Amino acid sequence: MKPMNRFATAATAAVFAATALLVPTAAQAAPILATTAASSNCVVTGGELGWGVKEGFRSYISGTIANGSWEVADGASYETPLFGWANPTGEIDAITGEGTVSFAGSIHFTGHDGVLNLQIANPTVVLNGDGTAKLLMDTKSNNAQGELVVDEQQAYLGKVEALGQLDPASGAVAFDQAPAVLTADGADAFGGFYASGDELDPVSLTLQLGPCEGTPAAPAQSADSNSETVTLTADEPANSVPWLPIAIGAVALVVIAVTAGMLIAGRKKGAAPAAPEDDVAPSDS
Ligand code: HEM
Image (cartoon, rainbow, N blue to C red; front, side, top):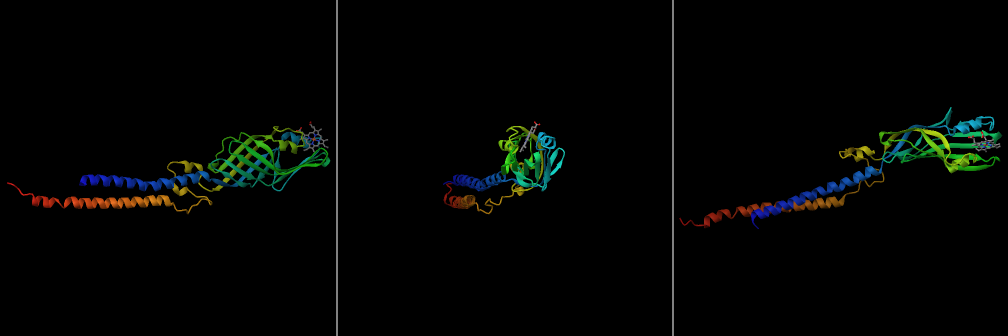
C-alpha cells in the first residue's frame, strides 16, 4: 500500500474509532433523563384544607326542623362558614401534579334528637393531575329511622372540579373555592335527601411541598440542565455498571492504538527506501 493510501485508511479508522468513543456518552445520557422524568414525588410539609360541606345542610341542621348542631374534634376546626383542617401528610408528583394528601379531624352533625347522626372525618384529597380531585372521608350516617346505614372508611364523597392551573414544581399547590359536587356515595351519607351531582360548598386547599425524590420537571427537561441536580430514586439501580458503553469504548481504544501503530510503521517504511534509491540510481551524466 502506498504511504498516502495507508494514511487515508488509518485516518478513516481513527475517525470511526473516535465516533465510537462518543457512543457511551449518548448511551448513558438517556437513562438519566428517563430517571428524572419518572420520579418526582414531593413530600407535603404543610398546608390547609377549607370546606363548608354544604351551606344548605348547615342551615337545615341549625334551623328549627332538625334542631341540631355540629361539633368538630381531633384536629378539625370551624369558623363560619368553613370547616378547616391543617397539618397534612402526603406526596405530590411535581411533574404530573398527581398526589394524595390527608388531614386528621372530624365533624359530627346531629339533629332530630339524635336520629340524624352524621360523622365525616379525616379528609383525603386525591389530586388526579387533570384539574380535578376526589374528596374522601371516613363516613358514618343514619337513615331517617335512626339506623346506622353508612359506615365506610375514606368514602368518595365529592368530586372537586376546575382546580385551575397547579404548579407543584414551584414547591406549592393551591386552589381557592374550587367547585365540588356530590358523588353517589356522598348522596347516601346525607340520608338520600340529596342526589349525586348536587352542588357542595367549594373547596380550598394550600399545600407546601418539601424535598422531592428525583428532579423537578423544569430542570430535568431543560437541554442545559445541570447534572448535579439529578438525584436517583431509591429503587433506581444507581450503582449498575454500564458494561455495553465500556466495551464499545475499549474496542475504540484498541482501534486507535492499532491505527496509530500502522501510521508510525508506515511512515518509517516509507522514509527508509528513499536514501538507497538515490544511491543505486547511477547518473548517466
Ligand atoms: C326523624 C328523622 C328526620 C326527619 C323528621 C327529617 C325531616 C326533614 C325535613 C322536613 C326536611 C325538609 C327540610 C326543608 O325542605 O327545608 C329534611 C331535609 C333534609 N334532611 Fe332530614 N329528616 C330526618 C332525618 C334525616 C337524616 C337521618 C338525615 C341524614 C343525614 C337527614 C338529612 C336531610 C337532608 C340532607 C336534608 C336536606 C337539607 C337541605 O334543605 O339542604 N334527615 N329533613
